[in-house]
Length: 174
Image 1 (cartoon, rainbow, N blue to C red):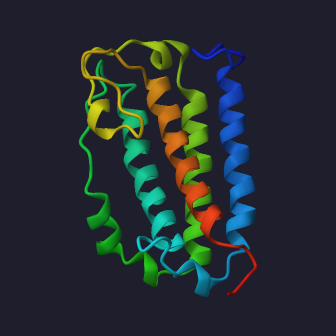
Image 2 (cartoon, helix red, strand yellow; image 1 turned 135 degrees about the vertical axis):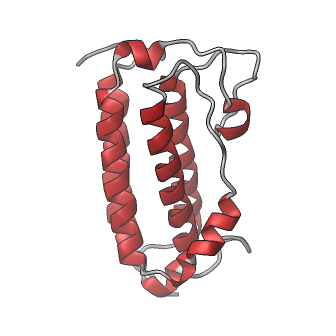
């Protein structure tokens, strides 16, 4: 369980860090009042919609993480994130329920990540769609790995959490 990842951390280290990120962020998110969670951030999505988007990202990446272990490529469809957020009306959903679902889904993803074998994580995949679906794109001409896709998911999640916490003050119903 102390497999070495491509960046010198063990797989266990970065998965444990991901779990801590989820747990720490959950505590902070729960401090944001319902009314404040529905206020737009920078004339775009509100915190509810960002967490909803992260739930959608979790759902899409859950399928990718599992399917990647059943095939030789990392070719997956994208999704229309704005449309998904609009259709599901995250702004009208319960903040507490969204945070709980986000937390549970991401802890499950940490479980899925931890069960991927070294061979699956490190297998170079020349065929991929990470130039279109990854947060930090990978050139189509470069091979990619499942480990990269998983870590990219975590980077995307952290980016959006920072977006929320930079703009919303937990506990302030301002």
